[in-house]
Image (cartoon, rainbow, N blue to C red):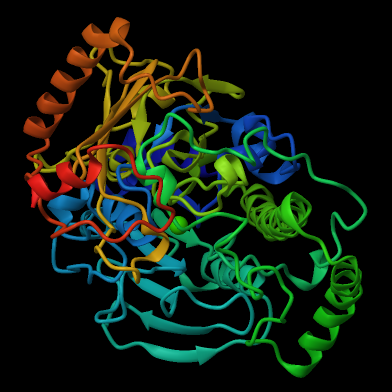
Length: 530
Ligand code: CA
């Protein structure tokens, strides 16, 4: 019907701007928080199944090598809004305020006639409503897993109405996204919807449907759950993000979450109290206690993902039932990866693979061959450019990434990036810095990764082919001297191209070691640096 109308009207009117607009694809950006690729079955997860997320890859393209520029929540979101690295968009670390007056891709899409919306987690501050959206309804800060307060701005007025919902946040965000798709948007325009979950962020509170999922199974442990960081530098030794030491009773569900109402708490306690009783009676110690913590953590994390997967399935079903699927680009990603007990850790921040890699799966029935896989080095700094290109818009010269549209069509440009630059900033030189991960920058190629913890001048080199788990830092091995020289040159070139300011000396002094393993001469060296 639509197609016939298009053909007939084209014959009569020739190329009409209105019809050209109608042929532009819709964009559905599905985003989660801290979802590692090794907990998605399309990526080969050994610990869970995600049948609905897998649909996006099976019917579209899976990117094996998508990497964030700065592995932390707010900064990743700011990169996606702007198509620029943190040092250019001004959002270096959580706690910064996003400058919403700057150029963002939703503003450009909106100006070009797209109906734009963001629903769910925003996490770029409450100092101003999200800019560039016809509709926004967002969590306050991190938002709770149950009974969220949300801020709604209709028509982008800047005035936010507050609504407190009752229920599980992953379900509620999906209900709101479906409501907007069905009833609220102006359907004479193509849409761009950012449908963004809080899950599976810490502290991993499952929804009522998944509280006892995995109760009767043991989840396989990562092979480096008991990593001792031998050959790695101070940063890996001094971090505060181990399953062994950092997790709180609330993380481990030994106390129920504070945001449940009476009815929800009764359901929660019925699920957790019997498990907690067994744990308390077992009086576990040492490695047995770490193993128990890992099981509790990973099961809760996967339960949160199971709910995301179910809810993504509802949205994909809606697109299919209404025929919207055909001309809608569905893109799934997460703000960065996460450690699932790898290196003994949870959380993110480091440039090691598990937290540096992002999931990226894209379905676009009109253009992508089902079951495609791309190994190209891509990044969250490419997302904004991709959205603009999908809409047929020019990419502003000050954006720093590249459109993925050629890759989606099966044509990787010959000059596609061969090395990706990373920089992490959230280390404030006191014990209050969350998780205590030192500032670092680095470069990754298809085979090697070189990392520089620049305020302590320590380097790490990994051969990802020989050592994909990054257990052996080979920086000091003489046979890699030429490779190190090349990688350092790539860092210098990328820092020049991306206009990265020199951040050395940004942290005034070294904090006391949390897990001291002094090496000879180290104190002297620190003193010299001050
Ligand atoms: Ca995150």
